[in-house]
Length: 79
Image 1 (cartoon, rainbow, N blue to C red):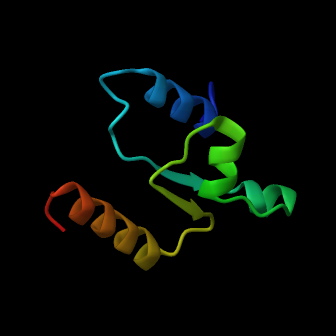
Image 2: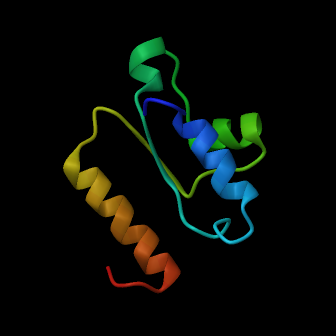
């Protein structure tokens, strides 16, 4: 993303009362770029809140599909 990173966008979503409940899937290549494994739990410790899902790049399409289906099922949406 050219102007902001995903962590900044996540913080903005969580700070906005209207958007706070929107499920977030973090798609990140930070582990690939830095060699440091990062997770939703790590993100929660770092930022004070966790995304609903955390997927490392490069993304396996089936993993992303399963993740979206899981979040939809949890929210009562179609899976």
